[in-house]
Length: 507
Image 1: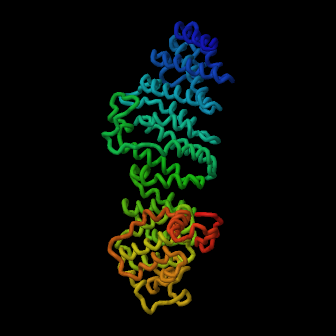
Image 2: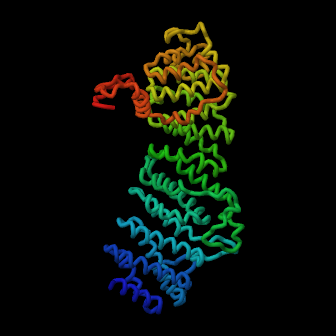
Image 3: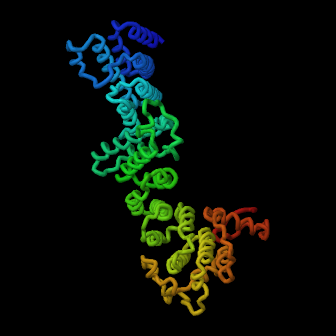
């Protein structure tokens, strides 16, 4: 309490008379103190002090001379005071920037908000001398100090970044933050020689991924400050915003990312990044690198490529070959199985795909199904049936009476990476026929549908994509409960090719 009263006294004295200007050091000294409460009080006092000085135009405007040079006789007493106080303001800004890395979040938050108050005031009362009519006087350098404080190299700043997001609703703030982030990435990543910086890159992603870009120029109406000839400046043009946005993302994504970040970027790519780029096809290099990582990341990269092919006329002849190469035994077991088949259904939805290509996918999925768990089979069999409905030319795989009866006679080449060379159309679907004898009755029933004439209406597989082994087990137990004597102490349940014996006195 006493400290707050002392700071209030200092504030009143400095603002009341220039003869008390040196008392500003008492405030700045506490701003660099060790006690959290002292720092918070000092930051609030600095906010009021320098906020008032900016509004009263008592800080030097223009290129700031060195403090020693300001003592020369060619400056008036008025200028000397303003130069001296401008240096104290810079000291305050430097301290607040350092405090954005403080251990206490309350200190970080207050430092951020104080600096953003200064950004707003400098935008209204520029410290940059207007050299020609219409020149931009937005405090870009001060905003870059804030951005650098939000992007530390060795700690997670996501909480502070989330506090900053409210400022990103201003079109001018967003534009200059994008510019500052691009500059920061160039400066920081150049020093690492392509070595990932997990904290820094995650902080950059946390800052730029929630950016809400305007769809039309008429949507750009919320600016922190407007000035003369505003409509003539780049900051008011949607095209300039899109160019800056594209440059920022390309700058971020050209460097190697921590593995987890690839997935986060790819998940938001189609909604939050590509629609606001002038040339979305420039993402091809990033998507190619992401595909090489494997697993779910490869699949998400193919989704990005698919969008570029269909919406932006990208020529990418290897797309289906890459998708085909992702078909391995793991696809029926991995946790992203539902996403894989959802996207594969999308990729194979066109009725204009050549029959040899679709046949290759059908055969490979069927071959891999021989070792798949029941819950996966109940999803993939309807999936294959839908492919037959879309591509009737592939039904030769089902209706081939003299086809091979086992793997040794099958002309299909499972190891062939090129779908067109796999000889799938010369084969038959003996794998699905063998599943008609599956130990699980639901699987056998689903496989038997290929013995009948398929309806033209596709099966809705959305409810089957997330089917789990537990749900299948639970369904089977409930189905058989009526037929099992209540006195039975042991009963058998088929699951995953194993007989599980459940010890129980009752159901």
